[in-house]
Amino acid sequence: MKHETDPVSADEMLVRLVWGSFYKPAEAPCVRPMAFAPRPNETDGISVFRLSCLTSAEQALDVIATEKQPGYGITLIPVAELLRIGMSVIPTPIPAVPGHAVIPELNSDRLKAGRKTCQDLQMALAVLASADVLRPPKV
Amino acid sequence: MTGWATKSPVVATGVELPRAVRTGAVESETIDPTWAVRIDELLAVRQLEDDWDGQGTPAPATGVVDSALILALLLRREGVAAPTLVTQGLSGGVHFDWLPGDGRYVELQVTEPQHGFIYVHTPGQAVLEYPISGLGGEVTS
Image (cartoon, rainbow over all chains, first blue to last red; front, side, top):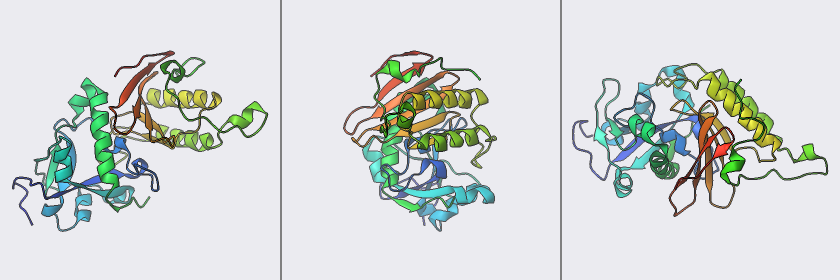
């Protein structure tokens, strides 16, 4: 396991939690672009978790209230692919779960400035995440 | 409820949304029955409270959902196929999307009352953005 303050390397995988209404199995992309929109409080970038810092991908769900956890699917995004399409990942540790990081290119300020650029990035992430759905939402 | 007037502003953008398949001679038979499901989903979105996702995300404002509802009713009446998906967004809006089967992905976002955007993703091309507001609409690329 890596320490969460270690630099992120290209051979790592990122965990992105995807709310159930943004997931449509048997369609392409099964994970929709809106799953990667910045929340209003995500000024520094959208949240991901470094799989190499977790005991399992499911550990990322510990950041969510227990009753809401079944509503989430778990997807994986290769860092190498993220870098290839011009995005980056920055470690931003939080107390609740190890390995928290953000994708700074998708942040709430950028969304306010213009949605179009974010749409392109969100679609690119949707395609990557759709290729590796580790666990679909349970509800 | 605030409205989108009597025609959907999507018409003015020139974006071609998938059409409902006509099943009979009666005009009402061109209405995609899946719209009823999608409208129920919009009504459910209207009931959401803040922190609906356990990550502190605000629920869409009532005025935004009402605009989305009116837009849905107009699109339904205009013979547009029901969206593949209708959902609340992470940034306070309401989203519709369509997968027309020609490789495009079309997403409509209602971001404020009577205001939103359509995004058309075509593989290998930059996304196209069409602001929609009231009855107007213009493309930016």
